Amino acid sequence: MFGKRHVLSMRDFSREEIDSVLDLAESLEPYARGGRCDALSGKILALLFFEPSTRTRLSFETAMMRLGGKTLNLGPAEGSAIAKGESLADTIRVIGAYADALVIRHPKEGSARLASQFSPVPVLNAGDGAGHHPTQTLLDLYTIRKESSLEDLKIALVGDLKYGRTVHSLAYALALYGAEITLVSPPSLEMPAPIKADLAGKGTRVRETHDLDSVIRDVDVLYVTRIQRERFPDPYEYTKVAKSYRIGPESLAGVQEGLIIMHPLPRVEEIAPEVDDTRHALYFKQSFYGVPVRMALLKMLIGDRLD
Image (cartoon, rainbow, N blue to C red):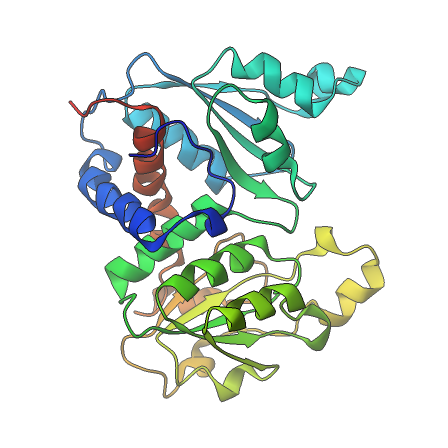
């Protein structure tokens, strides 16, 4: 149903389109766990990661291989023609002729949209600076739908809301589902005003606080993010907020029985390892769900059958 569209921002998706991705992901989950599928046999996915990545890159590779396709990895930028001064536009033009779709992660906001202007094949944004990370949001929604509920959802977004592209994308998507969103961050890392204004314009119920303890017992989902050292222009400013929140077993006293704790990973110190063994910890399962969700996207964008 997607044709040859690009996946650049959750703002480009309707609720119906999101639901179609999640529905297909659910049907593909058995294949993600090792079943045989040749839906993308003969197809090639190019991976262009200009920033470090573990889960996103490897889950895209896994998704493509589970569907019977192959991947083409650009590797470190210093080992490519980019180190010689080649522009991003020229790189995209060249690699777009080798593959059926491109996945790009880049430190500059807007880079994926720029790439889409020069690519002859679909571009999937795997994170553009502090901008958007739509495929992460889709796996987040899939996790919530499977492990909790997207209906009448109360969710707290915690941590770096200023630079956190995962929470930017997720907030826009949650607005489509009528979620009640609580924003929890240090004062210097609040959600950008334009995003809050957009959410308000959609009628989304949003409240804002700096006190995690005041909301943790009232929500269905706690979505925690790390404070991102690499986004701070001033290292001293990072040290002032680096340990703003830490969730340990003692933090979970009195929370709802069905509370789920999510995290896009990697975590640093914001969730204690002791939380991993509680019934609330969902972040490792959440990471796995990236495989069926990305399988669904690839199937919809470049596939034509499911064997």
